[in-house]
Image 1 (cartoon, rainbow, N blue to C red):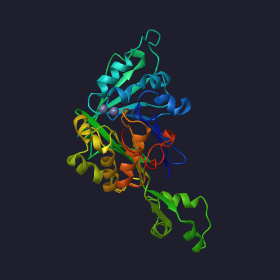
Image 2: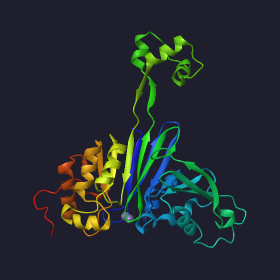
Image 3: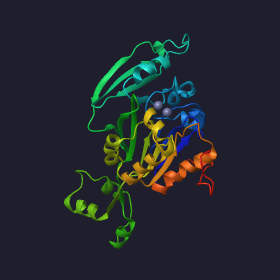
Image 4: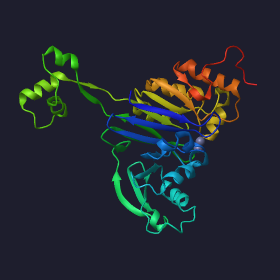
Length: 337
Ligand SMILES: [Zn+2]
Ligand SMILES: [Zn+2]
């Protein structure tokens, strides 16, 4: 497995998801949302190497920790600073950038690229530290194909806009399939490993027909790992119809589970999810694992055990983040008080 993810924040508090996509030679770090304490939760060394910050939406509990991150990265030039979010993200991020006194930075390098994800396109703007972030320099608009936001050498990132009385984006990260030489097949053919294998593995037009045939014999392609981050939206039939095909077979679903089933009316009214709904999404999408997050602060430990039990009744591989220390459904009296 090369995607590893860590939920940041405690039960009933702001949560975010820090993800590392490790391809051996390359490591990409993504942060989904940035609630209070997110930067501290990642740790300074990791935060300084963050590649992408992806907002589901910009309610306060999803951006309250941005200043802490920004303080570490505002003048960073070692790698691009890139932020994605729903329409309106560019405007709100500019306010955040401008929320400080910048009288010492004229001419200092440092740039932030922010993208509003519309259904059919990405609209981008670049902000410069040396200008005190005063101007939104437009970036070329990028047309979207389907739900795609980004394709890198290692993974694809998709986003779907869902209803939260505003747009809230659900994200899906999928590694590209990996091609490797099968050592058993190599040995069976009596071939000796060496630098020639890399050329064979890379494929392309440089190979003659015999080499191409050998390549097809030796290469095994394994599907990549995947993870999804779904939070803050109404999981009605329309949302299910959009998400289930997109998330099909996702390795690890990280999903908001704001309410107990008995509070379904609150979930409906506030455009949030219940535990059984999150579990139904994991089940219907055929997810490998489900981690519940963003639970309501109204619940105490016993109620959270009940909430987990409701999810596990539908999707047995449901769990809370390990550091919440609410690992298993408590025996016996899991009644809501
Ligand atoms: Zn929200
Ligand atoms: Zn929220």
